[in-house]
Image (cartoon, rainbow, N blue to C red):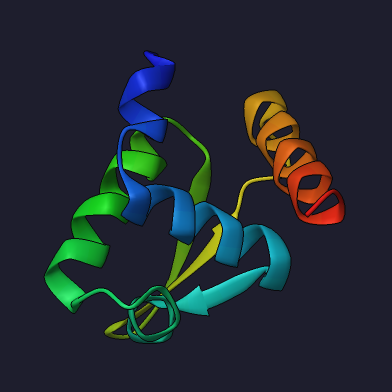
Length: 88
């Protein structure tokens, strides 16, 4: 995994921050909070899921994405986000 791939996109960073703070949301709500359109949000979530930083559950046609706290890299990113927010 190239760290540049994850952090090279402002949209992906926004999505990681949102999910690390809130826990789980559907794509439409993630897109709304991140200020992104649905298609772009979906693309970013697919990349983040490939790197196992987020995961999803499906309920019919609705996919709920959540931050993957079981992944050590995801936990470290959450700590970075929390530290960054604390020291603003």
